[in-house]
Amino acid sequence: MQSLKIVSRLLPEVRSGLKTHTIRWREKKIVPGPMLYVNASDVSDKILVLVTKVEKMPLSAVAFYLGRQNEWTDDGLLLGMREHYPEIELDSVVDIIHHITSGSS
Image (cartoon, one colour):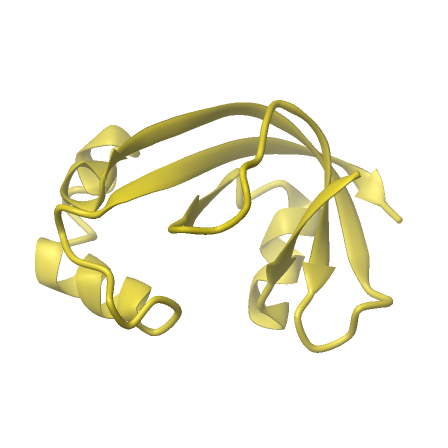
């Protein structure tokens, strides 16, 4: 089964259904279907989700695409993404992985 690691602070939002997407750059290919999010701090903590679609676009287009342009400035989004991907740029093509929570595993 496909899987992605996720920081533990985001797990409650995934479990509650509030977090319905993740932005990834240069990670393994994810396709629609079942996927496990694995807690990066505790691999025994997993959440089963259903990936509904994956969109590719430059990082600079993400805030508008997700309807967050009032919250996420280019500089703010770039700074946040660089915590995980130090070499990412605004023109880097990222994957927006959309999911629905289907339960815990």
